[in-house]
Image 1 (tube, helix red, strand yellow):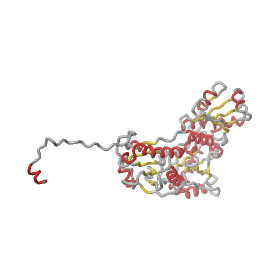
Image 2: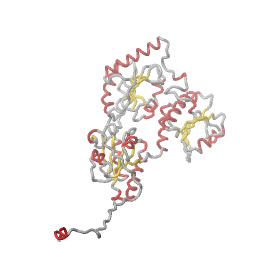
Image 3: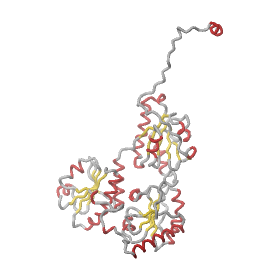
Amino acid sequence: MGLLLLGVLGCSLVLSVHGMYSASDDVVELTPSNFNKEVIQSDSLWLIEFYAPWCGHCQNLTPDWKKAATALKGIVKIGAVDADQHKSLGSQYGVRGFPTIKVFGANKNKPEEYQGGRNSQAIVDGAMNALRTLVKDRMSGKSGGSSYNKQSGGGSGGGSKKDVVELTDDNFDKMVLEGDDVWLVEFFAPWCGHCKNLEPEWAAAATAVKEQTKGRVRLGAMDATVHQGVSSRYGIRGFPTIKIFRKGEEPEDYQGGRSRGDIIERALDLFSDNAPPPELVEILSEDVLKKTCEDSQLCIIGVLPHILDTGASGRNGYLDVMVKMADKYKKKMWGWLWTEAGAQMDLEASLGIGGFGYPAMAAINTRKMKFALLRGSFSEAGIHEFLRELSVGRGSTATLGGGNMPKIHTVEAWDGKDGQLPVEEDYDLSDVDLDDDFEKDEL
């Protein structure tokens, strides 16, 4: 199939809350709750679109995707995942842009990238080519169908037991209760059938969560028939029982689904809840801007008054407002930047800010080269309303001046102090002889 060059394909700046497929379509709507049963454990060939409702290219693909699904009904399964809503599934399969189409064939744990055309005929042709390859592999004796139930780990989608921490009566308190990480702990019994069914899902989720949270959320397992001290402390009566442990808080029961997608999604929510707010960074160079914005859907940029106009206390007040809003919207994983008025004039000009109206704020989609300006007050209430409107698909946007990112100048970092006017030099003219004619002319 080749590799699909992933990237954000010109999707819009704002989000929508509406999906694009319904129960009356032949496209199967997939979620973390049904993905394992429908796809992973299936012997069918699947073409699955990972989309975002706000993505223009996804919206353009929808009628062709539906038409292809109808034409292939009973032959090849056509599915769709709202990867903006179900981020865990998108992350699990390396989705970086929308729409991304993947082919789930013989090895469901290693889907291939679809690189064909995006009209209905090209999609059907691509599906039939993939189906012929699958049948040929089965005829030659290669593995066909689902290998999911034959393994508990390995492969890009499988996970490994090594990432599930084995907990005991001896190590539980030190690792779980005294550590800073968030824990999801499964209490199991070796003879429990539901526990055995959960094992590969738990292992796969442990690997994905470890990678995506950099080890800040961990999955553990405890044999409650052996380590009865901890199990009795938390009133474990049935198996498997999953509990969530956060430092300094009472444990809570896990209420989600038991598929890897469900577990990953809950773990990422826990990570977001406990993660520090994104860093608010001063724009000191082009590299700073790129590093902060390249992996974020939006970059929020504040342009603050000159230090001579506000002093250190006034500036810190504005920065405090931005930090609070970065914390409030930290689950969005946006980038947060600020600059002093006049320090990045090209950037201001491209945003139409241009020398007045400070403090100002803009939300920029650097992939689409679109931006929106804060029209209300530079306050927690005003900024919250601005960002909330963007989040639900409202608010006006414009194209960044010139359609490209402006030149970013390298500047010195603010030293945290009040500004000082430049000191003019005093000149001693007492020993200078003025020309007589000049003096006469002046008189």
